[in-house]
View 1 (spheres, rainbow, N blue to C red):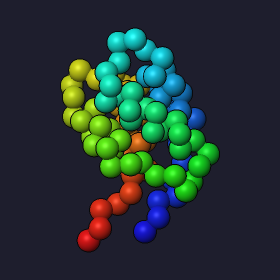
View 2 (view 1 turned 180 degrees about the vertical axis):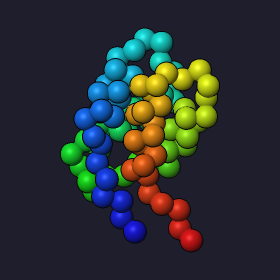
View 3 (view 1 turned 135 degrees about the vertical axis):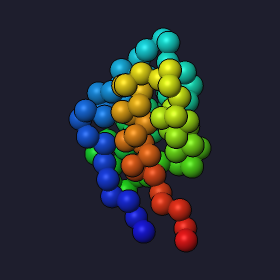
Length: 83
């Protein structure tokens, strides 16, 4: 089933700030880039590697709120698992 969600303005802003930060890790930047690439693109979905990175970002206690916002958006737009 297709996921037609797009990135909202709050998540896009958080993703942009995450990408601009020098102290942000690679996994956070991967999730943020995926989030930004899906702004206004309902047919694009988060890839499996980006979804995995986003999941790890959300589980990491050291991650900023902005990075977690971007990661959550990326996960919300990930393709669902096959049953």
